[in-house]
Length: 604
Image (cartoon, rainbow, N blue to C red; front, top):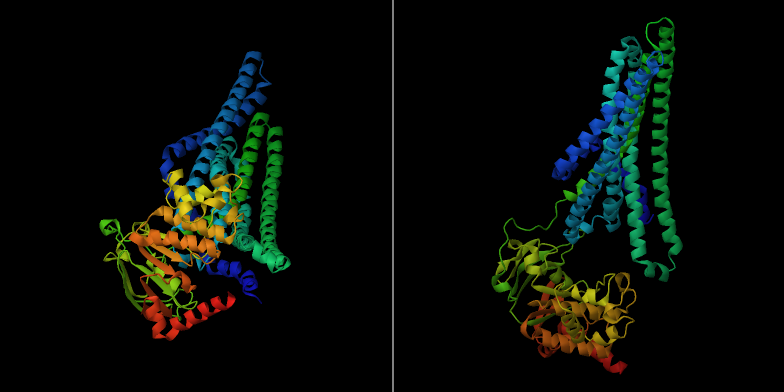
């Protein structure tokens, strides 16, 4: 069984088992902080809700007056009864429209706030969080779960409260109309409540399982679609589709069980409710024949009984919706309450002088959370002076990129500390020291926007002229002006319209535009042709003249001019110095240089 198949077989069911006891309607209380910002709107919606419930309960009284009014000898009195009934109906319509507007608007506002809060939390999470959860599942929670909450807040809760008021008020007015018939109705209530409670628990478990499978399906689809070229290149379309089909079918089977359970509960409740109504009507008809009550009173009682029965049926339906919303709320609250392994201090220290670029690694040891037994860095101690250009070289997995990861504090060291201008990174807010860094990653990220917007991502307040100057420095200006709309050409999702080298030059232009005191280049020229690489190297040389620059590179030709070269192996610095000195020393660097430069000469 593959890893993916294993997840398909186990993930949602195990999650449901682990958290079965926590799934309660009380989870909806977590929405309180979001609702508390809109107390006035809630009060207005509540007033409209109470108004419509009261008017609804008044209608049967009007109907009774109209029915019994047929026996009166005064046409004027009968006309007033009909006019009163019409006025009540109009008031009910106005109140219902107002309630709908206020409650729906409140739901949209609260759900928008929840989506923003969850996204704000997720966008700041460190990479270790995303080692444990798929991005697609996070997106599913932000979209699918919040859509479910929208339905509940803007509809279900309002309808539930209205039906609860009608249930209570209807029962009270039924008692006033006929205590005898009301007693008969109440005998049926326990028979209705029992299936609601029993089947409701089953429905809650199935609802959560269904949401878990939907999230799994979304995560699986996201992973495949984001890697669609690789999937197609390895002719893996059928296998990927089969995997997605399997997850989707699991979701469907779970949904089918949930639907069947809810349908069964609805059938039982409605059958019992209306069987009771028929029995009550039969008893009431006998009382009318015995002159124990009027026809209008019987019709009034019958309408109240139908309203109460309808309320019970609606509440049973809404109960299932609330249970689903409870599960969705739990999933969203989990994201909001997730404790990040990397966090900012309560009161962050300012970066001295805005950042000069003095970097120190003090006996740093580190293992990635998913590989705690493997040391990515093992006792690294180094000091980089402001304005110095330092290259990090070594075989893959030696720890070079990890230096960048820790320097940007995507992770914290297991031991030791890292300082910038003498201040421990953990004593500053991450946004403080990251603002002093510009990064060109090995796999440049290009957003679904225009080329100009992608470069301006480095400094949002930059002018068009500054954007173009940065592009020229990164040897990107010529190919950008050749695009159909020049700098304003939409480059596609993840830059699909661009070649690898073009993406990398845009990423370099973005870093140049940022104009930060520390420049981090992680294989920044690996996808460039020889001519572009030379142009970018010249740009980097000019750019690094007055700032601290760290360069990770496998191609040693790109680091020969560095002030200092650090050679990494197995998470340790095994040698350091200038290019010529390291070649003369022999060892790992000399071997790498001999292989690369000899192969280069042979190729020529």
